[in-house]
Image (tube, rainbow, N blue to C red; front, side, top):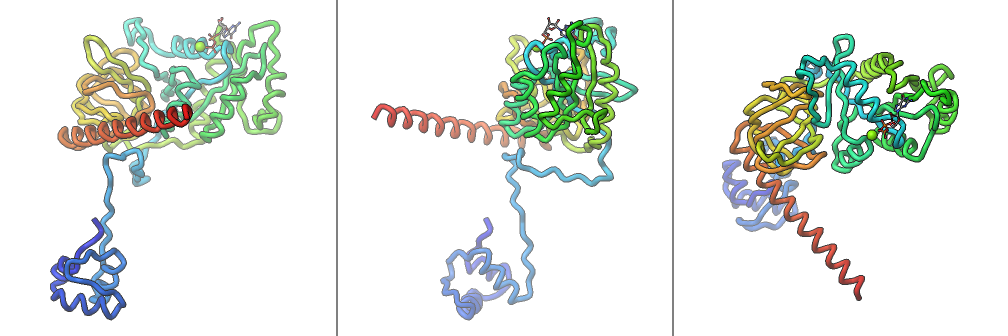
Length: 370
Ligand code: GDP
Ligand code: MG
């Protein structure tokens, strides 16, 4: 790729090879007829003949993580924010996630049963918000380690009776490294010992200056237990989301990230995918990490079968040949053959990488013993 022999170039230009060799010689390049010419030499010759070289960009589709997604702004529409709740242990992350879910997900939607797929959506003022409910820090770090950025907004939960703790700081660092806006949820304000002002004071040290003190960080005082202040938090999420102008093109082949995956005895490999751009449909040929297949069944966060899923929507799918990993990226391809090809190539690549890691490890072992 990118190189031609003198004979090939001569043929393309409709010239005699000897003429090309002569020209090359004049340019200070000695070449034989079967010699490979580099890009620069080819360009020199072509420009000498007044022929423009069209650069063919070779796209490695097996490395779709590196593909730059280019959309005409005219095709972009607003998408729901994807929110991760983080904070110190016991400060109320799980309680808050449950409380938001229970207050906003219509019970009859799921016949009262809410199944866990690692993410859920709520509707507030006719707008959707997607919450990831995998353990915050873990999900965040695995995904980021794999180069996937799925979170748009971090909710930092800090218990008003406990204040800033080590994992609070860790969460702030994660969010800052990912350049994701933080909304502080000062939780447990129902407690008699709650001291929200102290939390705000302590967080000033981390540049999270409250709006009411002249900064630009939104603080929501709430109780995940009683539900007080939760509606306000949801409204603030929508506000921040609007400021971030989160958009995606729903009319392209879907691309996104694995939230979680497992092997189900009856259904085979099952994966929760977060669609980040495009729309995922039943039947779509898909590559997920180094697995592939066709989207067989698709269910949403309340266990209902759906035929398609647009940007920021979490869905559980079946139809893959193997179990992918959380943080893996997925992409839909034009046909099944292509998906299989790409999937197999990626599996092969992964295998080689694992092997080389193993070799490295055993070499290290060896050196340690020496
Ligand atoms: P996580 O470790 O951050 O997920 O924290 P949990 O959600 O498991 O909460 C830890 C404890 O704090 C549990 O006993 C909760 O019932 C309690 N808790 C959470 N939120 C509140 C709240 O707003 N008020 C009070 N009083 N207790 C809360
Ligand atoms: Mg928890």
